[in-house]
Image (cartoon, rainbow over all chains, first blue to last red; front, side, top):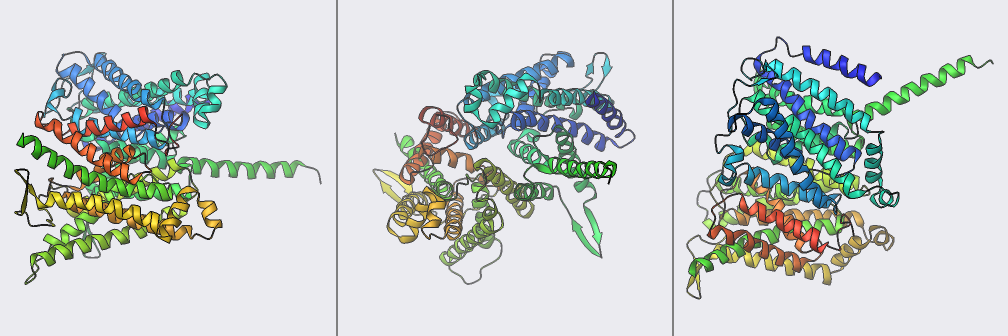
Length: 340
Length: 298
């Protein structure tokens, strides 16, 4: 029950947050939710089911291109576009899940990195796939509307943001609920030991494919909003380094915890923009410039430090501290009521 | 027919690069258990250091071979420092952690190195290569002219592979490295200095990555990302060798180079070679299931 209240309160606060900010920060807010979807999909896939993936941005990109194609080339409505985007991403997820039936750990990491690279350099850029990617210019999306509400990027960016945020809150609650459901318990059994899970009667094929399909669909759902908020689709946001960043930030924030997804999405979208905007000036009469590249350096260095020092991620570490504080208080109270 | 021969030569030299890069991956993986996704990024950074020395400032009065030698030595020296730094600052602290965790750490290293390089050298495409041999010198083989730079790559790949194999088989330190790769605990009990072995394999791996990076500069318009992403092709070549065997890895590099080059006779596509690399990775992992890999379900 509490998780619904938290989700609704979080939605109410976050939906008001970018109101009144300039268009750039409103775009960042919407982008933050898209990357939060990407990391949420990683929480399900890596945190629950224990499957490594370095191609989550590819799933999001396929969702974005699917949606863009539906609107710009087939002249469908945006609701249809989202359905198509999610469908494409889910299908790709199942296809990626097929080799994963026989692989795990570092071998799966190699395969998914290869897939991310193939989509980045080949599918999203080659003329063979112009029907899907709209050629060199990509798809242009304007005057889109969703269930009668105008949600196009130039005028009604916040409307798109609200819809996206509401969907994220729903998905986040779903993923939290999944943790102790039948499927969630099977996912975690697979994560802890595939052999033990299959001995206990977990259908490895079905549940591994299910994890990949759900995860890819979720990343694709976020990605399918990209043409809406950016007005166009291009390969750059979904290239292989975004996939690596998603994995890095997911692990950094704590890949087993749903709130880490929101935290990670915000971090990934807002910090680079703040750096490019305010990262230059003079300090003690010396000009300095902190460019966007420093963000990725920081992500890499923080990831290395986190894996050495705090293996459970930032959110997991905070949770651990909170639990320890609670326990101390509980002990004191028990001590006080005990008659001397 | 001569077109076919020309593509074969290009494919073999490209394969030589893959083989070189893959040798470093296999060496580091076997000895330290780290699957190094940052291998391309490490080679990239060292290559750019060499490039900076070569083109960055004037060398008055120096003959061109001396400038080349200076640039290559600078790149290799940087590679040594980088390898030592990674061993002492990062991987020494995670020796007993699961393989996946170590692999994810290398992704952090990749991201940091790549963006540090793009901060220094921007995202331009460079096409000012470092030639080992003069660009104009060619050999005639069966009526086909072969650039000396192509031969340098193939010779370097084969030489390093056999050199490394001899080092591992014949020297005391090589034996120590093989002992650690078999079982670090047992090796430590026998008095092998596991830390020293780890440091040497990181330095060797880093230097080999730098050699591969420097040798590839005459053949591609290189930038910070393309050299970093070379790691996928190198992983494919390393997988053909099962991540264990050095000779098979070199063979795998050459095979992959040819496989990636021949389709470009008919299809001009920049992305197609990546698809071939992925197919090779998938084929090897699904069909052959390398023994050296614990990550493969039997």
